[in-house]
Amino acid sequence: MKSLPISLRPSAFTLALSLGFAGTIIRAEDWSEFRGPGGQGHSAATNLPTEWSNQKNVKWEASVPGTGWASPVVVSGRVYLTTAEEKGSDLSLRALAFDATSGKPVWDTEVFLIKEVTKIHGKNSHASPTPIFADGKLYVHFGHDGTACVDATSGAVVWKQESLRYPPVHGNGGSPILVGDKLIFSCDAQKDPFIVALNKQTGEVAWKTPRGVETKRPFSFATPLAIEVNGKTQVISPASGAVIAYDPENGQEIWRCGYGEGYSVVPRPVYAHGLVYVCSGFNTATLYAIRPDGQGDVTKTHIAWEHSKTVPKESSVLVVDDLLYFNDDKGVASCLDAKTGEVIWQERLAAGGYSASPIYADGKIFFQNELGKGTVIKPGRTFEKLAENDIGEHGLASYGVTDGALFIRTDSKLYRIGG
Image (cartoon, rainbow, N blue to C red; front, side):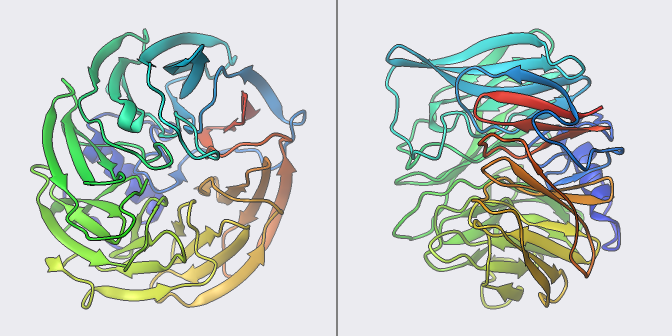
């Protein structure tokens, strides 16, 4: 895959990445992983709704058993989710498929039955990582409880990986990514944190690399991002204390950039304009713009700029053209110059906590808070709110997208908003 010009629009850039790395043809209107094709919150879908409620502009709603914050994955007319359902004292970790047109269940598969259930944070679920779709397979990840490959047509389990047990803190969170023939995810636990790659055909461990970062709180939950720098692929993976770039072929470290004692890192990185944008986590988050062309420890040499006001600790940032957008956990939205870090505007969104990551599609930016209130804005150097909507139900999952429709997961339901 050849290098792409910096001037390429992020939506086209992320789609190109998904085609090159996942090894499958993803249609423009598909939403194949956490934050969509390429993992940076961009969709080529069109004719999306701007206004909705739990009654207005709803094509269908479907009940979702159990609990989970995995975001909807929408591919080839189906919507995929994971969930965790109590079975007495046991926990059934499941993968689900719905018909995207009607909302009717297609299949429901128990992937793991957990006998010893780990205590998690009250805000989290046992099914928070988002699945990823490629080549007719759905890869589902439940953190320390296991990872599996499921046939997307039938729901049959193809393989399971249960050997990577580790002591989590607050449960699981980060989603997996596909790079070539490898499924890669972070395991930043209570102790001995690491990142690992599985053979996507068999589930066997291809490589496993210790983080090697000394921090007081080593646990984090970030989803990696694959990028291409000077013709070579890097996997950018935030951990507690540092963001680290790895060679996806062998897991060897390429570079790292430290951010002190930042921990419980959740936001997924973004790559645009030759810069990787990373948020440093709790207790006080800082947003870093890092040049990814270094080697070894680049903390003192490759930070282009940093910003430390109203930076998200949970939701991811979004780049559209030359501007970078994000919301903090309390709903203050910011727009920065993506190249310099200059603050363009800051405005307050609908009241409530914010965990879901914003998306860009159909010329609009969509934000969603935990109370089910969604704000739609027009991207630009002036804040322009197009609509404020209320689904009326609590939820932490980010949107799923396809042509003409948004998919919203709440505590107990899945909604198709729009045509």
